[in-house]
Image (cartoon, rainbow, N blue to C red):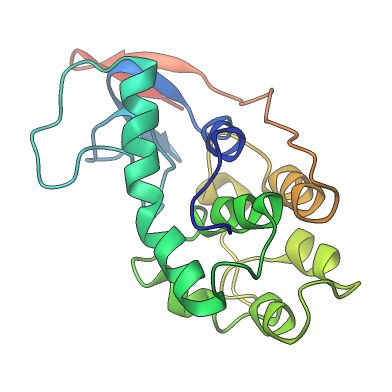
Length: 193
């Protein structure tokens, strides 16, 4: 029964995000965003990893940030289980799909996911030979794609999709080890770019 992301899956997802124990912002195309983060974050994601409806703490430990990340993933986990059932995916397949869902940039991300060729293929046959290529080629709104720079500042989307496809098909957690993060301070706040 697979109903939640595993510890290894959580580590995999977290590895694609910057991490800070203190408050920071993200800069894209020389513009610093208004959203402040602490812990893990994905720029432009429906899942800004910060405490929802609460005052943002000034510091977090890595364990506290991981707990918040897990809580933020609950909606995606619930929707995937509600749609496909508890026993449809193996743990690594489930982890790969939750990771993939965290990269969508719209609060209605699951309905957008349901419009993709990948979703249709998963519904028809989760073991289909084309699942790997559908994951590696998935770009949200499949025909309308943001530039890689504006989509995510810190990693190459093709590398992430390849890692997610490998996780789905072979069960291998290839955590990101090469985030391209630079840091500066603007008005007393750490900014990642």
